[in-house]
Amino acid sequence: MIVSIPIFLIYCLLRYCFQFSDHDRESPKDQILWACENGKLDFISKLLEDDPSLVNAQDSDEYTPLHRAAYSIDINAVTNSGQTALHLAATNPSAIETAQLLLMDFKIDLSIKNSVGETATDIANRCSPFAYMFSISDPVLNPYKYRG
Image (tube, rainbow, N blue to C red; front, side, top):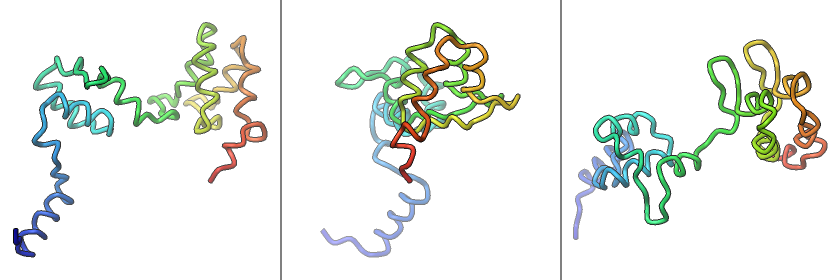
């Protein structure tokens, strides 16, 4: 099959500039799973507006949009008041397992301060029975912190 160069270039430009993709031709179920995995919030909103039942879509491994969204998670995401998941875990005495998992992730950033200037470690030292665990993420003890 011979394709002229100008048509091929136009196709490439459209695909690049307008993010035309094969997902445009897939089923809404496949689209929502792909969009959640890739953090495409505007596309997710449109799909759910058109069909709210897509929130329960599953792939062949029974992964839902929530499972797929976990692939692109930002462990240090902050709320409007600067709270991270670790800040919230530090305030909850029953969240010891959550805090432990977060602290063991080499990407966790203990230096993030909330809107009142407190780090998660500050909060834990003030009101958490498991404040001692926050030392496991110290750069001296965590070799992953030295990665560039």
